[in-house]
Length: 430
Ligand code: IMP
Image (tube, rainbow, N blue to C red; front, side, top):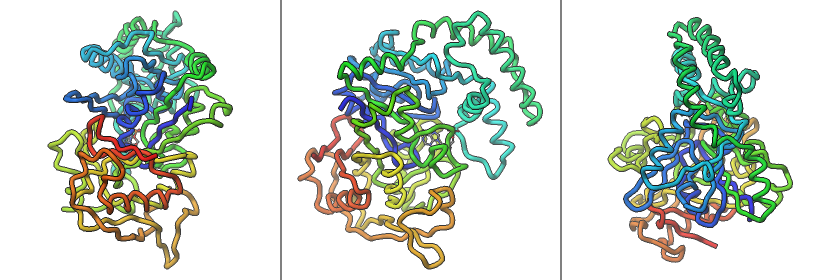
């Protein structure tokens, strides 16, 4: 199918990077449509681990053209670090392979400073942002005073950066935080503009032409459904549309391409979350440690971007069903099944209870989850290590039953299952 959208069905960190990597083997374009360097997408190829925050994960495949779409917010410093890392790994990041929308917005050090100052002001009620300046950059976009990539080409760009820093300094002062030196930021961005100029393009035209020519475009979502600004656990969300329809607005694609799109929801075999906010199926103590890992392995549950330990819990089928509906997911890719090996039994949340009433749909979306108590179904676990399994039929029967129940709750099939961090450790189920 020409447009394939890969999105997270939970609170991010579902393992989208490695699923994108799997699909990218057959694709021509890999495009990010939302967020910025708050994301951390990991792809493991042999002994090499790529941690990508801005550049779409598909870039690792040599024939792919990678696109940073108009829905993104781009921190040039992070982008340069990532481009250098990729180059050192022998991956080309020439302007022919990496294209950035002229309409994407810039993240500046002033946005980062504002993000941190606003979080400090929220105190105990903080959102637990990544501190990357995401919220303030999208605020500037919405209030129509943002700096776009196209502005880097304008003669008065440095002046505009200076005005932006001066404006941000006024707010920083009000928040009791120190301001930044406009001249330093201007110079930094003047240099960045010189370097980025050849990469800036009308990516909507390029994607449209590619789809018309029958090429395959992979739209790579960042964060997850429950962090969507409209449909997530508001206000504990990020500032962009992380859900599949966001791929259209965030890449400048029309509804005509949506008709034939394949929408893959990536869901971890259990639930995780970083930052604050409700989490009905959260577990603690020894069980949490068992799901999270100790941090010794790169795949343990510690943030790729911030290093924070992730909160962990049992899979929430109510929220999964919600994610299927909001995204129009056609299928699921389940990740980290191997982590569930060794449990005698597993818990799967199939409904919520409140005031004695059972809910399988939420009356007002997931904003107010704190008021619900999860209702669990107990399923048999499996003791076998599944990390070398390469066919559905050779998965332990209890693992198949767990996945079948998950698909049943979701109402869509499980098409892929990852059983380890390596590129090859994926079981396909047609
Ligand atoms: P922000 O996107 O940095 O503003 O953070 C808002 C919320 O989204 C916080 O709870 C973050 O922990 C969470 N968040 C942002 N990006 C990611 C991600 O890529 N994975 C998981 N959580 C994220």
